[in-house]
Length: 214
Image 1 (tube, rainbow, N blue to C red):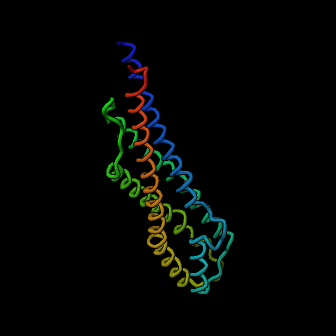
Image 2 (cartoon, rainbow, N blue to C red; image 1 turned 45 degrees about the vertical axis):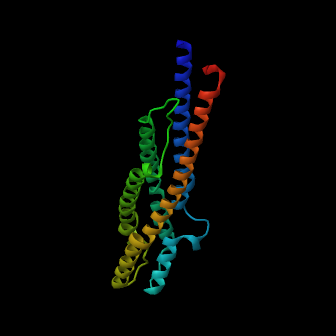
C-alpha cells in the first residue's frame, strides 16, 4: 500500500514538474521569440518607425540630421528594452507558477488554467511595459535628440521637431507596440491553456488506467 501511494505521489510530482516546465517554455518563447523582435532593429530602414518619423519631421521642418547620431540614439534605445523582456518573463512565469502550485492535484483534480486566470498578470505586464517604455523614450530619445541636429539649425524648428516626435512616440508608436505585445500574449495564453489541459488529461488517464497503480 505504501509503495502504491509513493508511486502516486511520484506521478503527481512528475505531472507538476511537466506543468511548470511548460509554463517556463511558453513564457520563454513568448518573451524572447515573439516580443523581443518587436524591439530589435528591423531588417530594413523603411520598417524602422522611429527613424522614418525622424526623417519625415526633419523634412517637414527643413532640418538636416546627423544620421550617425540618429542611428546611435535609436540603437541605444532598443538595447535598453532588453531589460523589460526579462521583467515580462519573471512577472508572467512567477505568477503562473504560483497559481498552479495552489491548485490541488489528485485522481479527480487536475491543473486547469482559464482565460480569466491571466487577466491580473496580463494587466500587470501591460502597466509595467507602458511605464518602462515611457521612461526609456524620455531618457534615451527625448533627452538626447539634440545630438542629432547639425550646426546652424533654427531653435524653433528643433523644438517643433522634438514636440512632435515625443507626441508620436508616447501615443501612436507606444500604443501600436502595446497592441502587438497584447496580441502575442493572448496567443501564447491560448496555447498554454490547451497544453496544460492535454497534460492533465494524460495524467488522469495514466493514473486511472496504468497497471502500476492497481
